[in-house]
Amino acid sequence: MQFSRKRRGLTNPQTEVYGHALQFYGQPPLENISLSEFEAFAVDRLKLLKTVENLGVSHVKLSEVYSKKLENEFKNLNFPYRTDVDERKSQSGPNEYDKRRKDHISHFILRLAYCQTEDLRRWFIQQEVDLFRYRFSDLSAKHKLEFLHRNNLQYDTISVEEKKAMQDKLVNSSYAVSGITVEDQDFYKVPFQDALDLVRTRRVYLKAGYVYIPHQDIVTIVLNDFRTRLSKALALTARSLPAVHSDERLQPLLNHLSHAYVGQDYSIQKNVGKISLEQIDSGRVELSGKSFPLCMRQLHQSLRENHHLRHGGRMQYGLFLKGIGLSLEQALQFWRSEFIRGKVDADKFDKAYAYGIRHMFGKEGKRADYTPYSCMKVILSNAPSQGDHHGCPFRHSDPELLKQKLQFYKVSPSGISQILELVKGMHYQLACQKYFELTHNIEDANFSLNHPNQYFIESQRVLGGGKDIKRETDAPQRPQENPTKGSGAAREAAAANTSQGVAEIMEELDSFFQDA
Image 1: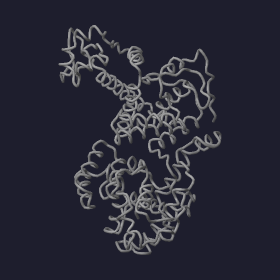
Image 2: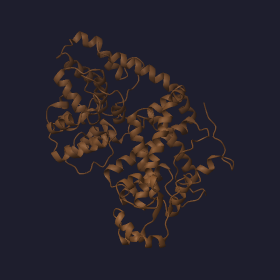
Image 3: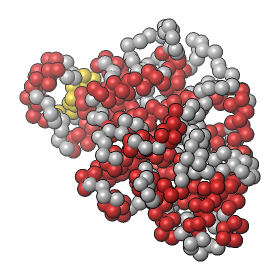
Image 4: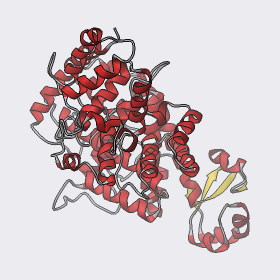
C-alpha cells in the first residue's frame, strides 16, 4: 500500500521542529511516508550510528580526525551537519529542511526497532548520545544558548565582568581551568540541583544556590538530560510494540532493522568448489586456524572434538562454509564424515540431516538461497544455552573463559587486555576486529568488520593467498537491507508479504535442522 506524503506548507506543525539543527526528539513525526522511504531512512541512520560506534573506539571523541570522518559520513548519508545554513535549495541533493526531516523521522523509526530488548536499547542510547555530543559541540555559542532555552534548560552564560570578578574562585574550583582558559570560554550559571554530580565531586564553584559551570561540563549536563529523556522514551515505546507488531507491513521491517546488515551479500557464491575439504584444517593452508573468525573457529573445534553440533551451531557454521565456497556435495561429505565418527550412523545421517543441508543450499523445499549470518544476527539472535557452541565468543563467553581461549590461540597479554576492554564496553565486533589485527600482525585492518565471511575474505587478502576468493570481493554488492534502489511499488509489495514468507521459510528450515 502506497502512503502519500503531505505537502509541506506554512501550517505544517513540523516546520517549527525542522527550523533548528538539533533537537531532543521530544515530538514524534506526524506525516505519512511510504514503506520504501521508511526503510531507506532507517538503514541510513543505522549506517550513521555504526560509524559513530566505530569512530568512538578507533579515535578520541571530538578529535579532529574523529570529527572530520563523522562529518563526511553526514554528507554521504544526507544528514544535517551544519548550523549556518538556510532553507534555500542546494544545487544538488536535498535541502537542509529535507535533511532535518530525515534526521527526525529516522530517529523515531530506530526507536521502534531498538526498544525491544535491553541490549538493543543500551546500544542505541550510547550511539545516539555520542552522535548528540558531536552535534552539540559543533554548535556555536549562540546556537548552544538558543538550544538550552528552547528545551527549557534556562542556563545563561555569565558576562565578562562576572568572570573577571570570580576568576580566582572559578580557577580553584573548576577542573582543568586556568586563568587563561577562563577568559577564552563560556561559563554557565545553573541551579545547583541540576548539577548535583558536579557539586558532589566538587568540580564547580557554588554560590547562592547556583553553580558556575565551564563549557566542557555543560555538555555533560545536556548529555545526561538527553540520555534520561531517551531512556524513558524507549521504555514508553516498548509498551506500544504489540500494536505496532499487529501491522504485518512493519513487523518484519522492524525485526530486520535490529539485526540489519548492509554490506556484501555472501549468498552470492562466486567460489563454489574452490575450497577443498583438506584445506579447512590440514596442510599448508589450514583455513580454520588462519582465516576463520573466532566464532567459526570455536564451532569447528567443537565439531572435531564432539563429532556433532546442535541446531544453532549447524546453522551458523554450515551457512558460513557455504559462503566461503563449499559446494553442496562437499558440505554433505564434510558433515557426514564428521557425524558418523560420533553417535550418528550413515543411515541416520541421511534421514535426519542430509535433507536439511540440501535445503540450506536451496535444493529442497522452497529452494531459497539462505544467506550466511552477519555479526549482528550472531550477536543478537538465538543466544547459546548449555551444550551449545554457536553465537559470538566476544558477546556470549564469560570474560575469563574468553581470556583462556585467546591465550590458547597465542594472543599476546597486551592484546588480550585490549580485546577484553572492548568487550567490557560491549563493542563486540570491534573486539573481533582487534583479534583479526593481532592474529594477522597488522596495525590497522582498514575495514569495518560486520560479517564472519568478510573476516575470511580479508584474512585471505592479508595472507596473500586464495586468488579466487579475492575475486569475490569484486562481485556487485547486493545489500541485504538497502532499500534505496528499485521500484518503490515493488518494494512495498515485497514488504507486505515479508512477514508471512519469512515465518514460513524459517519455520520449515528450522524443522529440518532439529536434532533427531
